[in-house]
Image 1 (tube, one colour):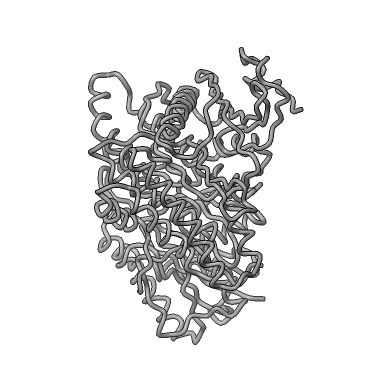
Image 2: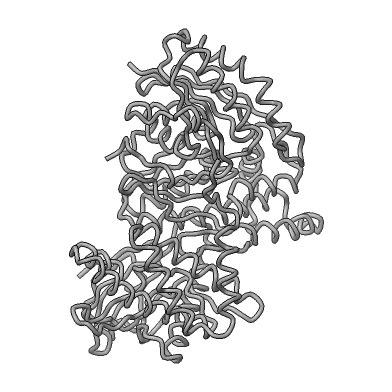
Length: 248
Length: 335
């Protein structure tokens, strides 16, 4: 068991309901522990204090993100999107306790392993396509419900029962999520897609194009009627302020 | 022994540097400083570079105590940057290459910054934060490319600082960013500004319009001093930069950070980044204004690496390009 001396977890008022928690990852934003909550395996996410930033800013960011995460995880779940169940939260301490997704790997590892297997190109393409379309549908559903994830990468999709053909995809980490509105939705959604495209290019550079193309195909079926506006906007976002390649 | 002369002039600095096997023999530079409240325009900047490039070249050779015969190749900035200034420098580099009968190498400006940072700090495989007036990128080396993990989706952080300096009519001497940094030291009242991180990307344009519109009013109403605003602006934009750098480090399992580019010599940014690194058990590498700010030696150093693996630019390709992404160049000199 990890020492919790420096952690708000030690002060957690409901500590008795959490058992045997251990640190499994220190991300950029939070410490992730695995524990047991009311006899169920759970994940505890604690946004720790960032000493490099101004205390007011740190507090504002932690509060806002924790609040949003709690709120939007529950919303997404109510719209039938696969994501971890919310068990418990202490917003003022930046702590949330959520469902542990059993028998899962990140989509990032899943793809990297798939590529490593040296499958025939056609088979790999088919598998990637199937996966990408499903991811696209999840993103489309989130967007249809005006939820912008804010950190779409292949690390933030979990593949449950990954050994089987009919695995289940679970979207996680709503830490940078926000609710969009009628006026800014096309821009917000386009940026969300753009962040995903960029993440694919840096993490799966060889397969990025194929994956993103199929993500968009799945996305279009679920994102609602303004898909054209969103995709047009994506083109604008791609061009904006970036040092795009150009023949000199 | 390989000796390279490098020419840089993609923005408002013109610099000529000479590198010999990892040693900076000379690195003189001249900056085009505009009046307060004004940015630099391409044609005037090009004119400035034209006026100084030949005397700087002579000065560099004298300081290095070498003759042109000892130079093995000429490196120049191919891009990205402003068209007219780039062109001025490219013409001089091409002329000298013909006159001296030397190979010529077109260098990506961003890669110049990274290679110079690596040379000076001896960082092995760092996550690189490249921050300047024209660029904001988080870069990591992988499989023969400097891959861009995060970047600005609109304006560069240096541009955001420069434009706010214009609102406050701060001097552009030595640079608007330096003067914001000095003002910020005397600020204490923190104003919460829009904070915009999307995955590993950042956006500054919303924040800039917010502070451009509200800033002058808040000063007029005596609610905040200009120093407070500079302080708040720095605290906010730097926190965003440190956050995306940390995200990229966590993503790539990196234990080193290297800050390059003009904004990289800001000591507050370095201090914040160092704190983040300490929390993660990582090491920060940073350089000072001699190498952070655009200079000729950085182009010479990237040219040096390229020359050693035979990446010489064919004559008909010694052009310039205003847009030239960091991840376009194959990094044949690294494993």
